[in-house]
Structures are given as structure tokens and as C-alpha cells.
Image 1 (tube, rainbow, N blue to C red):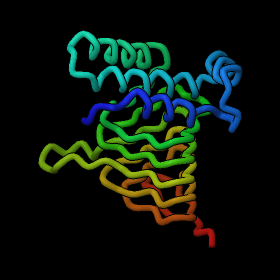
Image 2: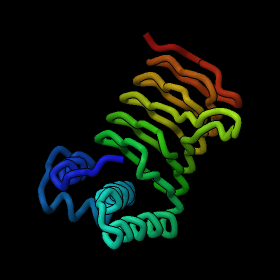
Image 3: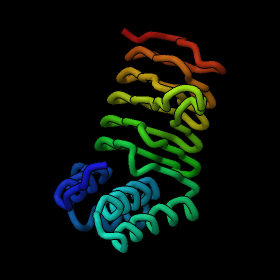
Length: 181
């Protein structure tokens, strides 16, 4: 994992603010009234501290992660890559594994899991979520797959195969229900 600069962390936090209005007032309002923003703020600050070389500073990053798990039941790996403008309206029980890549303008609802296939005989592979995807409550995105841009994953879907862009998928296992032109 490469070290993050404070400037990059600060920019990512500003990109997480819900409105285009990036003021101190908006930051304070978001901090107190947007649990999704607080989760992302906690994650980004924790990741910043965790990527430092100093052992004690890294422990601050671990403390941020512990608080995220204890308070919100969210486990977001510092090895994951999260783009800008991720929206988490109900940030309870979200799990984002080690190698997960989430691009920009993605919305994720509660109890969603992004993880590897868990097979010991195979190399771990994690999903890539492209721009503009919406993933509804309880969905599980498993393995080295790609969810195409502007797709929708239905509630409680278990996705184990690639989903093309501009499509709607749902079910267990997930099947493509509709492709939007």
C-alpha cells in the first residue's frame, strides 16, 4: 500500500461532501447529520494514518478502523480503493474487502458485502465497481468480477459473474433482468 499524502486525503474528504458547496458550514452539517459522510471521513482519515511508516501513527489508523467496526458495524479495508462521491445512505453492516475497487458516483445501501470468493485453492480476487452503479440493501458482490457502469444491483442479490454496463441484475444467483440502452 502506498503512502497517501495529506493533500490527496483532504481532496478525497471534500469530494465526499454531499453538495457541491464545499464550505466549513457544509462540512459541519455533514459531519453531524450524515452518517454516510462520517463513515467515509473515518475511513479516509484512518487510511491516511495507517499508511504512515511510524508504528504509533499506524495505531491511530487502527483505532479509526476499530471505531468504524464497533460503532457502525462497517469493515472497510484500507487496501481497497474508493473513488469520489461514494454515497452510503444507511451505513450499517457494509463490508468492503482488501482489493475492492469502487469508482466514482456509486451508491451503496446497508448490509452490502464486497469480497473475494474465499476459496483457499485459488488466488484471491475482488470485485471492481464501475462509475454510477447503485447497489441495494443486502447485496453480495463476490469474486474477481466487474459491475459495469450505471448498473443497478437489486436488494439481496448474490452477484458472482460480470454484469455489463447499463443493466439491472437481481436474484440468487444474480441474473440480468434488463439492459438499458
